[in-house]
Image 1: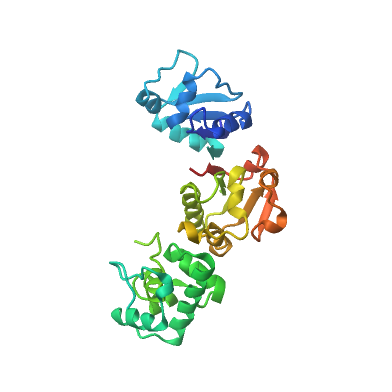
Image 2: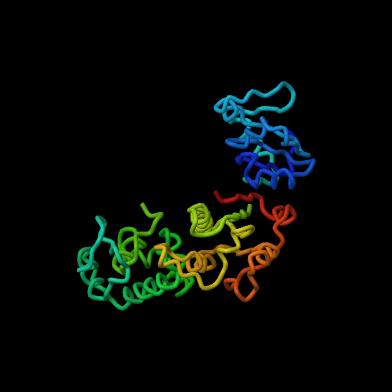
Length: 93
Length: 103
Length: 116
């Protein structure tokens, strides 16, 4: 398993100032994991990031958000834990 | 005696007097010595400056250590003075609110 | 393993910051290295002369002054945000270090957590 430089755990909706701040800070080598209200970013067109974007599937399912195939990789809770273990650094937004 | 909550802590920290401390200590069968008063006065001053009780026993010990050094800032010393959970017992006698993170 | 807790919301209007302070104190209680960063409207935590008695709240200024006693390593504040809220160095609580709150700063910590 490759290491992740920085894992950004983003739980804010797109209207929250920290959502934009997170996207602007995340670099191409970073991974952004959308959880809780953060998954709402998937339903807005504006959310584009330079790093890799993942989303927590149970939080998507809870909100009835279906990923369009290929646009975003989804993870479950076990995979989320594995991600935090692989990350050099974690930022919880 | 000023008003107290169901765990014996004063409702108003500013209603405290040394006589109140004697009464509360007696309930725990503690006879207040100079060593007790040193910690009680320290807690009164701490509360005046920070408007908060040390939130947990560990932080109580830390704060005492910061003020008086290793010799008094250790849990055995404080446990001997204030049996049970020292932060709770000492705060109760000193008239401070219940430490938030003590069980 | 060092943690940075970020407070970017102003004091008194919500509990978020106080919970963050509690988290910082708890980490310090177990000797885990922790620092606090105030940015955005959060810099208003650091203004000297707060008297919240009339709104029946405890002074975060006084609560915060206990941080070094409990072992919190540093109180940091974003310099630009302090300027934005008219906070000159002499109006800030003692012991605050001005920094630039950017991704460079976050790399010094294995975990950065925003409050609330």
